[in-house]
Length: 203
Image 1: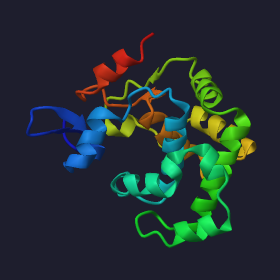
Image 2 (image 1 turned 135 degrees about the vertical axis):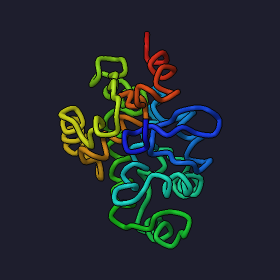
Image 3 (image 1 turned 45 degrees about the vertical axis):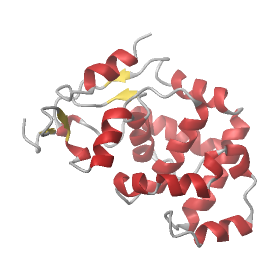
Image 4 (image 1 turned 45 degrees about the horizontal axis):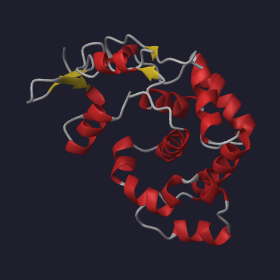
């Protein structure tokens, strides 16, 4: 299959989804994290916030800054982030290691407060996984053109998150989040990670 169709053959003999390119950091992320079912509520919070920061940017940009984001946002402890005040916002706006977007920073604080209002880690994880019936949806995508930017599910979840007080979680951001955290397995069927992630999603 050609890159245009969605799979790229790498020098190690493995076929991978087109989007990770050849950057070692990106390839490792593709091979070890993306599409792996994540059920830890705090890890899900971190990924949702980072996907919100990605809006308008490439994921590799965020990935390269992830450690700096973790330092800046108290290791994505929602209880700590929820207590951020004006001085913290200014501190983050002066931090060159992260994406310095005031609206996104303020949105992350709002999302932390909404996460706590939903009941914390277990409640957030349970609520998300209930949206897919408790097990990952198998996209069964074969080509790049089969992969949508958003779905009815991501639109519904985005609407519920917004109603709950979360920010920067539109349908496209939410779908990227669902893919990354393995609620949807959107590795292409010919990718070497498709079958392992499918197996991980089985009860």
